[in-house]
Image (cartoon, rainbow, N blue to C red; front, side):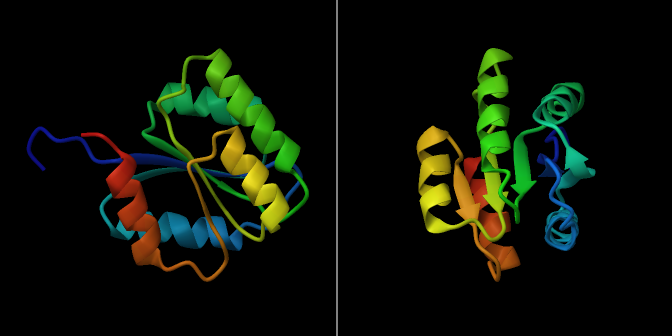
Length: 132
């Protein structure tokens, strides 16, 4: 790949949400597209995600959400700002009700991918937002 670094994406499930299948499938999509994936798994706190993002120097954070943990996503965004990570886009995927999705987008989430989003749309979006 020459001197270009691969896009590095952190994928996690936040809070007490135990739904991991979507996060694992998206992780595989991204790896198949040539991206480096840091998969944290389930039951992660905003602090754990921010710490890993800093340690791993990720380009994007992807959060899978299928439970009512939307406040924790807001806490993640606040913690990122406090740590100077405003330049790392946060994308979310999962069954997020429209009202919560609108709130998250207003708070700073870059994009929300509902269930059945194509691998191509996710990969293309991440590729388009990462500045090389």
